[in-house]
Structure formats: C-alpha cells, structure tokens
Amino acid sequence: MKRHEIRAFLRVKGIALSTGTISNRSLDYLLLFKQLHEAKTAEIKALIERKCGMILHMDGTHRSGGRVVFVLQEVETAT
Image (cartoon, rainbow, N blue to C red; front, side, top):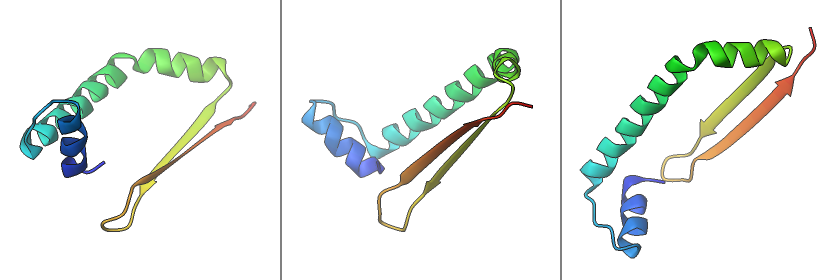
C-alpha cells in the first residue's frame, strides 16, 4: 500500500498519522526486521541445513501507479 492508502485506511480506524510518520514507521519496521534476521542467522542456517536446503525467492514488482504484486516461491531440495 502507498502512504496515502495507509493513511486513509488508518483514518477509518480513528488513527490520524501524517505520510511522513507512516514513512518513518515503515523504516523502523524494516530496521527491526533486519535486526531480527541478523540475531537469528545461526538458527536460520541450522533450519536450512536440517531441511537439506531451501530456496526462497521473493519478487515484488509493479507498474508505476499500480499495485505491488509479491510472488513467493519456496523449493526444498535433497542434496
């Protein structure tokens, strides 16, 4: 969702935020997710090794002004 779409969605819920605040909270989320990923790297590697390998491909493409479509693909392989 774009900032103005998020803002409209939240407004219906009685939450008023500026688009700047929404941008800042989005960045906060990404930074926290990065920290979580880095903190759990060893566990992620162990899981991948236990499952004999895993490939996760994520693609988020969109046309200008259009919706973003995310495609996720997981493939397990035995090596």
